Length: 382
Ligand SMILES: [Fe+2]
Ligand SMILES: [Fe+2]
Image (cartoon, rainbow, N blue to C red; front, side, top):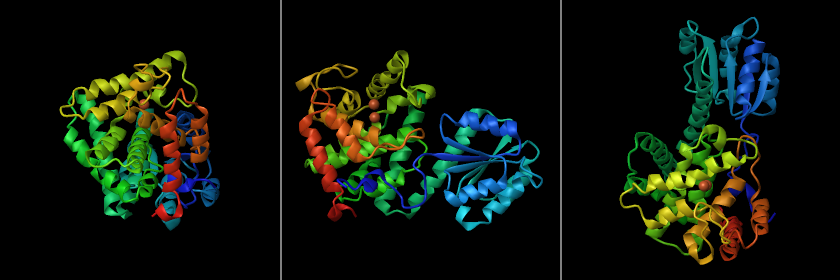
């Protein structure tokens, strides 16, 4: 194998599937059908109307979360949940429990685990999605406590910064750049000391795709800079630029942002507007280094001038833009989405090489390939 793919993708040795699998169990066929249909665009859904079948499936692999309905056979979903929680190897699987109003008090008393979220029927579909997401993320983030302090801080700080940006955008407030920059310091330290692997592993399975992509871009961009001899404040520009490069996507409608298939022409225009949305937001940021604006504003530009939003060409694209374009494409190809398996780094590099000299800077592309080989060689993976 050319690269150590597992290391780059943050693979775990635990028996998880590549996609985000959700088990749904209910004895009410209509409820089971409706929930399964609703979740299908976002997750790989496995519906069950029988507790025995679900238990058999759990012996094969663990889903990311389970939605358990109170209506289930003669003994009901609550009894199933209680028995389920007694089995240690299943105890850490996040659960969303759905029940009618009036039945919840009993459930909340009996399901004290923080990994059980309750939802009162009838509920809005968005509430179910949020409950699943929150459960999945709480489970992933809980594992960060087991990490080394630097890696743990890198993930916790960047997640907190990323979430704060969503609030700032919603409230129309400017970005406190110094805070974002400080939040990225542990990430830079982790990369400079060669311990980036835990960062990629740590976000695996996290359900906030925009955060995961931004963290991966920040990590790979910092790795790339480190490999090229970048130091000091310039490293922090790469890390913060990575975290902030796509924040305009927070303004893009969910159905466009997370559409599994190809975008039509109108949707493509909306999706591409994330760059100008990012720039509009960052323009209001006092003290923002120009390098961060370049990473955010030019990561979709191409050498031959066919990129967007400015259509910059050749020498108009500076080094940061060229590096960011390579890292953004590489990260997007190797990211894990609910509807696709992540591409291997080898395959991603092949595709990027096939894109030709009109798209990506060939000199930097070669350097990035060297970095992948270097970073995944035995001596450097620790
Ligand atoms: Fe982008
Ligand atoms: Fe991106």
